[in-house]
View 1 (cartoon, rainbow, N blue to C red):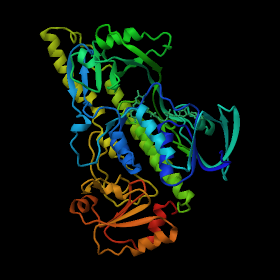
View 2: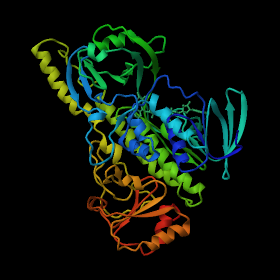
View 3: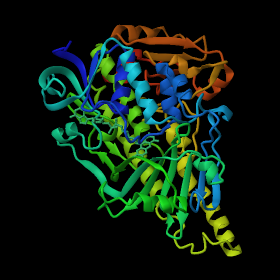
View 4: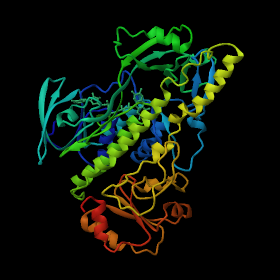
Length: 538
Ligand SMILES: Cc1cc2nc3c(=O)[nH]c(=O)nc-3n(C[C@H](O)[C@H](O)[C@H](O)COP(=O)(O)OP(=O)(O)OC[C@H]3O[C@@H](n4cnc5c(N)ncnc54)[C@H](O)[C@@H]3O)c2cc1C
């Protein structure tokens, strides 16, 4: 059944559109997602699900599925620096396999290896578990008109060859880098359009690691006398599926002219018979949209930020967009979001887009040709060994930074957000490799175990959560103000010394997306003003 009217129409069924459909579905908001393709992933891009995305998956009830994905739990996530796959190993960043990961204080999870070939279908199954989410493959947005009242969309049902007309309260373009929705809105991209022209080659090579005489690793980064030039990554160890990425080419290659065998020989250090599975020629960009939407039309994911995969921030940033936008759309559609709530999406997320694109480009700038000019690198001699030892250590330190990103994954905060109330404390440093646990307004409310397998994060999500670390504080004024405005709010009394210390104030108000909106030791003089501010109505 085709609805003629829908609250939210999502265009694009990549991981970000699917994540938004899950977020809305989880919040009880009816939506339709249209994807022009059939949902099959021939050439997977995304493989690393960040710590924060894992926490979001926990809220949605799918974290265990990610943890149990077909990437083997005992396969090390290490990054090995090599002269070639069959050549010398020069250094290694150790990242333990899932089965051996020790819990860390800052999250119930670590970053996980879970390719898009598994992650996207998990998201799709989640969307299909909500009867109010309407998922349509092989449906393409042809045109839309947005007014102050709503959005009229013209959609082509590609199988039926029929055109459908749907009215939506909001239209969200999760339609990828070439985003027709962004184009139609006339929103430009700021930044450096093309920073390199990479090529991906997918192949099957059973027992490759064993044949090469290496210890297993997820990434093998090859450097020769021209420096670091690509990466060899296992996507699906059980089915021996690998991807060779060439970092930069002159941009003239076509699928017919790519010298796959030549690149493979260079990567392996010798000829190797493989089963070729696919090829993708793409552009590495460093851009952020000048705006994340206009009126009733919003954009998320690669439609608004395109970045180098160094640092694995692409989809993970897009999931962050989906979560920020999702609760705000729900609030407005459910009648308790203020007039300024949706506008805060641009304020909050655009600055994170700029931050993450900058970090990813910075990692790529370090990588590009790293170690170029080491003429004896592949030599079986004492001088060659000395060069490898030196370069390996440098690669671990410098190139390795893109694999030590806990600050990037968890430390993003909504500075200067109109719907968060600063408490005057200084911002902790925002560094890629370091995360400082803090409940400063704008930050992700930090994790602490309250009981075995019960994190404080489990309290957040449906509405606002008012954490009360002192039973004595009278929060009835805040509760009444929330009731008055129809804002869903639950008070949670926390009797836990570590949490009290970490959160730093007796009262902490956490938003539905798990970010801190406000904290203080006493109730505010005007609780209605507090509630209006955090719901975007002040
Ligand atoms: C080599 C590589 C490795 C990467 N690794 C990681 C990683 O480990 N972690 C990470 O977080 N990110 C990674 N990324 C980035 C990540 O893949 C992207 O950021 C992510 O796929 C973007 O998702 P999206 O849903 O925004 O866009 P897309 O995946 O591009 O999806 C957009 C969808 O919109 C559809 N569409 C477009 N126009 C229309 C229309 N008119 N009507 C209907 N549908 C339409 C398209 O068919 C497409 O399916 C990597 C990228 C690369 C290149």
